[in-house]
Structures are given as C-alpha cells and as structure tokens.
Image (cartoon, rainbow over all chains, first blue to last red; front, side):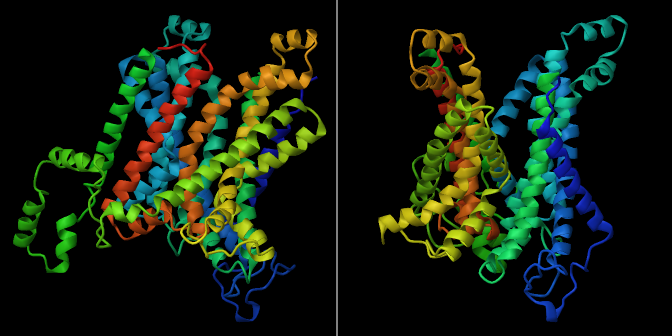
Length: 267
Length: 313
C-alpha cells in the first residue's frame, strides 16, 4: 500500500487556502482597508472585525489581506525571475558542462554562502528601496539557488539512456534539454519553487520590517508587524494576527515544498 | 596538510575578491566623500581640489589597494555622519553582537542535538510526530515575529525583562546576559528545529546500519550504542549545517536587534544605510563577508576532520 504523503496534503491545503484568501482580498475585503473609523478605534477581535482594528479604526483583517497581497506579489515575481533565469542557466551549464560551468558554479557557491537578507541589504543601500527594486534585487539573488538545483539534475540526467536515444534520433541540444529532460526534473523544480516562495515571503517580510523594503502607501506584512510592535502593549492582537497570517503563509509553502521532495524521493 | 594549504589559498583569494567587489559596489553610489564634506557649498573647483587632496581622483584599483591596506591594519576610515573613526564606532558594538550570536549558537547546539537524537530514537511514535509537527511550525516562524511574541509573553505578560531597556555589560554582566537571553532564543528556535530535523533523519539512517546490529548482538546496551557509535556518525551532516548557520544567525541578529532595541552591529548597519554613511556600511559588510567565508572554510575543514572518508581533493 502506498504511504500517504501528509506533508504534501496539509501543505497544499494551507497554501491553497492562504492564496485563495489573498486573491479574494483583491476583489473583496470586509471593509475598506484604508477607511478610518473614529468610533471603532483599537477594538479587540470580535465577530464584526475578525482581527480587530488598529488605532485609526481600520479593519485589520482587510489590511492583512492587502499586505498579504503585496507579499504574495513580490514572492511571485521574485520566484518567477529567479526560477526562469536559474532554470535557463542551470540547464545550459548542467547539460554542456565545461569551463563556463565550472566558473559559474564556483561563483554560485560563493554567492549562496551569504545570507539572502545581508546581500539584499547591501543592494538596497546602493540602489534604494521600493516594491519594484525589492522584486528585482530578491529575484536576482534567488537565481543561484535555482541554477544549482537545476544544474545538478541536468548533469545527472544527461547520461541517461533516453537522452542518448533522443540524440540518436536527431534531436538538437535545445530539444533534448527542454522537451526531454525538463519534464523529468519537473517535481524537483516544483519543490524548489515552493521553497523559493517560502524564502521570498520571509526575505521580503524581514526587509520591510526593517523599513528597507516596501514603502508606504504599499501595505506589507513586514511593515505592519513593525507598526504593530509599537502598540504591543495596547493592541497585542495587531502583531499576533498579522504575524500568524504570515506564519501560515510561510508554513503552507514550506510544507508543500517538503511534501514534493518526499514524493520525488519515493518515485 | 596539502588539503588545508589548498583550502587556505582559496580562502585568501575569496576574501580578496569579496572585499574588492564590496569596495567597487560602493563606488557606484552617487556622491563621494568630498561631496559629503563640502555639502551644498561645493563648487566644481573646490570639489576637484578636495578630491585631489583626498586621493579620490586616483584610479579605482589604487584606491582599493590603499583602503585594503588600511583596513587590514584596523583603520576603516571615518564615518560621514559622526565625527568618529569607523573603528571607534564599531568597537563598543562588536562584543554585543558577538555575545548575541554566540548565545544563539550555543542554544541551537543544546536544543537540537538532544532533541534530534531523541526524535530519531523514538521515530514513528506519537511523541516523535508531535515534536516533529511543533518543529515544523517553528521553522516557519521568522525570528523577528518570535521576538515580538517573546516581548509580549515574557516582557509585557510575565515582566521578565523590559523591552527597550538594554542593560550594558558595563552596568551589570548578569543583566546583560539576561537581556540577551530572549533575543538569542528567538534566533535559535527556528534554526534548532531545522538542525533537529536533520539530525533525526541522520540518526534513523545510522540506526539501520549493520554496525548497530553487530554491537547489539555483542551485548551492548542500546543507549550505549546510540551514544558511542551512532551519534558520532550521525553528527557529521549536522556539524556542517551548524557551521553554515553562523552567518545566518548574524543576519538574523540584524533584525532581532531591531526588535529588542539592542545597540549592536545590526542597528548600526541599518542606521548607516538610512543615513548613506558608506564607510560604516562598507566596513560592516566586509567584516560580515569575511565571517561568512571563514565559516565556510571552517565547515570544510571540520567536515574533513570528522569524516576522513571524504576525498581529499
């Protein structure tokens, strides 16, 4: 009997619910996230306001959804940039090998030795902050990790029989790489996408928490946590609800990634 | 011996390249030291004169050589924002961040190793599943949020410390360590969960080896086999992981220092970035980069020491 992959199931469900909530937030939120309501200042969570309200009477649930949207957008773009560039670089170097492969991978190793947030801080101090700059900086910083994984897979697959067969049938290198090998490394790629998502949400939240990331008027979970910290004594629910929302988002993607890895191992 | 020599040469080359890259990166930012000193009253002539005087009109690589030479002898230039040398600015903050990092690292070791072994020993039981699930959640909690939760529970709720009232080691050594306890724990818990998970998998793998059965059949107690034989082998991947987490701990401490308002390197780095105080940013970045490279070197060497099977290339 096949063992059930609970990590994948739970992760998939949590990630799906969180993404669905955030997507719902783009078309509908219970209240206007920026509407001030003097009569409803600093309310504890209740049925009308699930996460409570902040010191301006703004509904926190609506604001968390909006912040989650920014975080998700940044994570999505980051992973898209890192994933696409990393896959192209990794597949080319892994398939062809040679000196370029050697040099690029050495460079890759040294870059990935540095914590993401440190490199991102350096880039931000040179190029400045803002939503699009963060996407670009994080996207570029995520390339090495994808390139390394894809390279490893391609280097292993290229000596397999099916690749040899395709080559004998007259398929060109690009056809072999993208039509034959790529579908076989799909699961590995998917799991690194999920883990990349999780890291991107973490990195963005950290940067925004330090006010080095997303700038107002854009909402972000990290920024909201920084704000919430100031009113921890009077409104603990602000920090707790924002933080828990973020943890669930990260947890969902990290479980999803691990579940996909487990599945790959069992195959 | 040849192995270490080769590694050492690579280490020096990497340090050289990393410092060069960092130096050049901060050359592309607009506005140099001369422009900062003269401010709005600068005329093109006075700017050029001061640049010449400060040696800023020389080729980039010559400036780098000069800077590196001074840096290696402990002279890191002067801060733009404060009328102080970077060295004097960093001096009192380094021990604080160092203590925080060291405490967090010790906690990771003390939590993850017993936990990982225990989980590996009880693999498949309910207790293993429960601790595994809790660990999984901790892995997903960013340390700054954990810091906020600690402030709420232990600071505001139980009044074990007052957030924002950092106690300097000059005032009270025990107070200093006491204040750093929760920040260090906030950094340590997520990493401990990761290390424990790694160790658990490693212990399970080792327990299936033949040598365990042999030792058991010769009458050794399970606990002694676990302690003497299994742990030694199971720790190999974990030691490398631990060495590699040190840079991560430092990076996390930058954020956690902000949560607990600890006047360490991290807060200085952030305020310097916001104030565009590049000499300070450059000095901190290069120091952290050196730390990363050194830890990688250490991980390689340790890896080779504990497992001689690893090919010496």
